[in-house]
Amino acid sequence: MKNDKIVLLFKYRNDFKTIRQLMNWWDPVGLINSGAPEDEYDDVTEQILLELNKGTNQKHLAVFICSIFENDFDFEISAEDANIFVARLKPNPLG
Image (cartoon, rainbow, N blue to C red; front, top):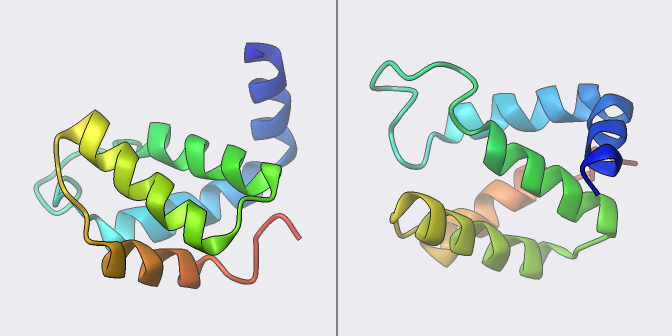
């Protein structure tokens, strides 16, 4: 599984960069604005990229993003904010 992830990230490195830029612009927890490095949300970005690769629809992706921040950052993201972020990902960077 880890090798699949590495291959996927290499194949979609430009998409990863695009999602990273959007995630850092959104900065839902305020970490980037507080001086954190640009790779602070890379684990989230990887998970989003993997979900997009699976073909996850917008509604489920927004719910998935909310759960990531709640579980990994102990930070609640509103469904509305997650939906706005997901809408900005469209068209799907994976094609």
